[in-house]
Length: 378
Image (tube, rainbow, N blue to C red):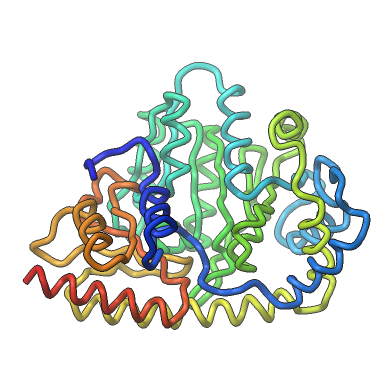
């Protein structure tokens, strides 16, 4: 495998497993089934007359349920909600809109390492992407950040907490400072909220009450209910941007599958059903993370502080220096697929990302394969 490829390394490694077998720890696929009640809701609504286009903005009842979830955190008089085909479409819609809105040259920034959409979307539009910080930073140097934003004419900034691939979270004070910088320098802040419910300890808190017209929020049901194939997400946009973004959605995605929205609305109408599943899911992910972390540390992998999400971000033990070669050889020899860190940062040659949101059985087999592989290198 070459050091750099145009295609997503996540797709490359995942497709190998799908075609030739193995354990897929490359893609953010949950190793758990959706809630039984949600599947039952899907079966029930499939017999109802809900098989035509849904409203472009989304199923009205589902939209209201999501708004109720955010009502105490966000000023809903100023922000409007749009259902999208997953969080990926939401991010793409916002980026496409902002690219058309921004006059002149500009650049895009995110904390280093950065999720693939944050890096690749600017590349597709021939816009410079600027990563900020070191790979395992725990403290944000806001003076330096402000300087870099001004120097590079940053107009779009992506942030998620917990992050992907690095599952670090940002404090409320950090987010508040970033919101202030966004307003001061008039750059757009896209907040990716997908992993916010999948924390290991304390919840990650975005001070959404401080949102302003330069802020957008993206989320989905994919990870919280283990339904990545449903592709049901949403975005919040300030009312001044909403109409234009909705128009883009009308002529590209049009609407989110009506049956799936109906099933989600029915499931969420059951008191605490979603929270009960989320609690179980969090426990499973934390157990998987702790198990895999201990196994890798015994092999001298370095693991920075990680606070949540689906992934374990780790640096290879010395003398290994290439995440690409490691991922390639590990799959060929042990049929375990991981993602080389270079996919998320040019600085991450000796790093890899591992999905630990899988069953204990799979994680046990994968860790055994990695252990044998590392020992064969010694």
